[in-house]
Length: 101
Image 1 (cartoon, rainbow, N blue to C red):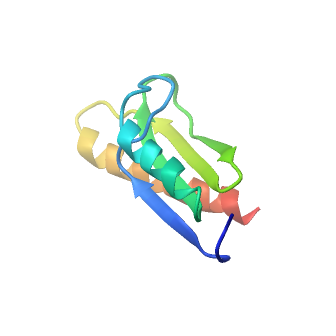
Image 2: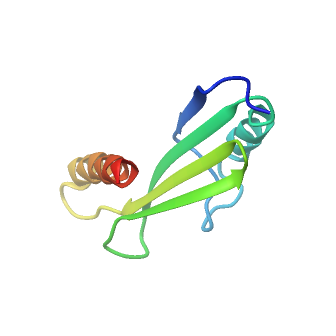
Image 3: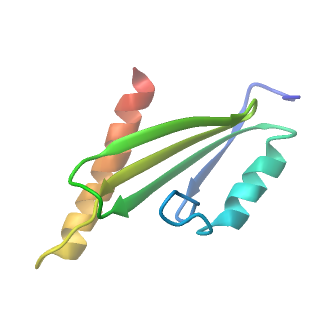
């Protein structure tokens, strides 16, 4: 039941993932509610200690809701803040490359 070819974009700092399913649940419920009237795209990037790799998960929740969840490695060491920022930027760059394919 899309009213136009435009989509609402959520660039969120909190969103539920497998390791923390209640983190940002309000944002996900909001996106689901809006998707009944308009196309919605959710983009979420988060640091994960599971491995030293970047991973993009693309999921269609329903006809009008698409989620792009980007996992990037958690930073450690003396330059933790700088490395975390650089990994966050790289995660979004990888997502843009994924979307352009």
